[in-house]
Length: 128
Image (tube, rainbow, N blue to C red; front, top):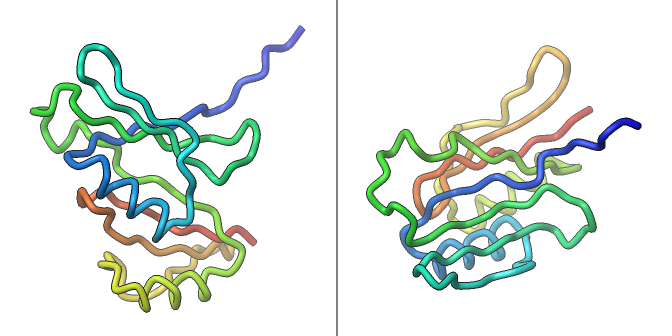
């Protein structure tokens, strides 16, 4: 019997849970699937697109708030079907872009990066 494996979630440390949730829902289009406070003061929120079994983003607040910047995840990649439409939509929202143009890999995959509210890198990624 083969065990099914998958990436369950990616955790991102945040300083302001409400600001981060607002960004990920309004800009990235995710929905809050679960948000709760632990007895020890740790608050977590799991976000996704609402599909069963999807890899989620976990926002974490109040756990070792003094972690160095290199303790954060480098980036989260969000899959899109129309990279140009996402670029245009995010430009209209006034989001801070890292890239000045959409990049294309030799295999045809296209992508660009923006900053999240905590300066985390978010990649919009279109496979061919």
